[in-house]
Length: 333
Ligand SMILES: Nc1ncnc2c1ncn2[C@@H]1O[C@H](COP(=O)(O)OP(=O)(O)OP(=O)(O)O)[C@@H](O)[C@H]1O
Image (tube, rainbow, N blue to C red):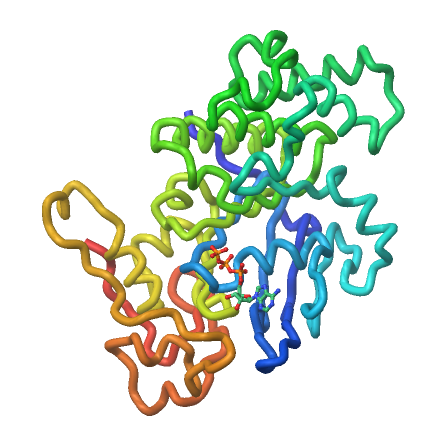
């Protein structure tokens, strides 16, 4: 049975509007995030997709207030359950981080301490935000491990990270993110380093978990195939901007932006097995030397002189939002 997320008109867990995160370097201003809009509701998974360097991680770090000099949020708004986080005090952000908003990284060792047993670190993670008895904290740790599909959680609690496989370590890191029952999880390529079977199992557990607990999630990845089976909605990012966003099925079946179409055409399928995959020609541009107008213009076979002006986000087919002067209408075969 497929469980659909409960969409509602309630206040989104996260609403990002016109976010600009810039790095003021000696070489010039790097506009890593340049006018990003995102919305995630309770129980919903948003896939944030794009090639390396498109600004996905910086978007995630901006939300949890972890942008260091020479970077800073130069404009826009980040509302968490209606509360403005741009300009919030470090004290407030610290309180939210790990408790209400959790982050999961590609390398689980960013979360795990190699010299502490799993039970010790899980209990510490709870005690950092809440005064509960050690017994209650351990019970919660055990439940969190079970929730992400870890067999024999009682035994796993007594191990050190190096005694676990890569997949198990990542599951433990995800369980730690869940410990304080966050309302929002930002997952930055957490399954990229794992083999496809383990990746599929973790994606299944994560999806189930968001549905059951009402946790909102942003899943950051360069792999459109991963989020096509996981996310409710997809936002495609290119050179610091969201170029297309909408319901997953609509973005995958009827991409309106030539960049999204290019990403879809480069996903291997049964039909393309044994043949050379179509790759998007050219390279992602340097954010210090962006082309005039649409940043995708030099790589786009549909580009015309019109594209010398920056396209704004416009309503598109199937309720999507797209930044393109020449929106596509063809459905993917
Ligand atoms: N400390 C920094 N100083 C200057 N520029 C930076 C800094 N950190 C990030 N950037 C810029 O921000 C851009 C976006 O980085 P980001 O990590 O968000 O990309 P990404 O889409 O997550 O890619 P990846 O998948 O490779 O992590 C980078 O291409 C880089 O130009």
